[in-house]
Length: 188
Image 1: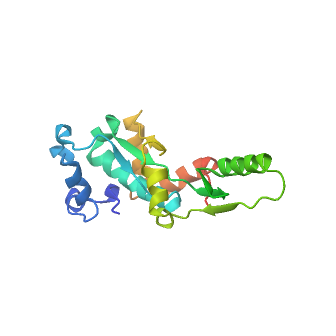
Image 2: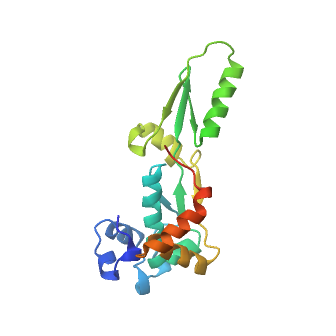
Image 3: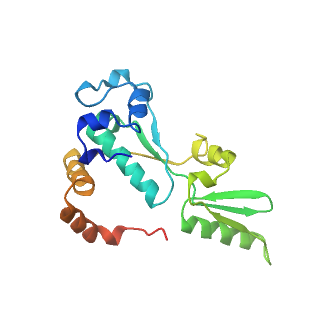
């Protein structure tokens, strides 16, 4: 995926990963953008629930922010939240999205079924590890899926952060990371 923060517009327009996105949405980009031509009013970024997936989501958000900001401003951009774990007990699956939620399900199953119960806990490393039925049911089915809507509350601050995190200069990025490391969660 192309980091549009470090690329010229012609490279963005001709990028083989972004061309299908631009064509699918139908709006054009940059100064040619026309929100009235938008084909979809829910654009869902679906990536692995790990550091690499977060990076891909950030690259796409940077693209939308720089070339199609009205999509974010109008509330059309979402990030899918695939489950991190599947806890199985007696042919019933419980999909959880955090370590805490997994632990809570395990504790509840032990409480409801005292004694030695056999649980199977699977940690998903990516969407490709899920069976298609699981992906459909947990991440794509509107009745069950979890998504975060992307909101833009301060465009000036967002511009600054995208420039720091995705831009050319290393020193401001290093400083930002050092100052905000206390808020990070590690996926190890």
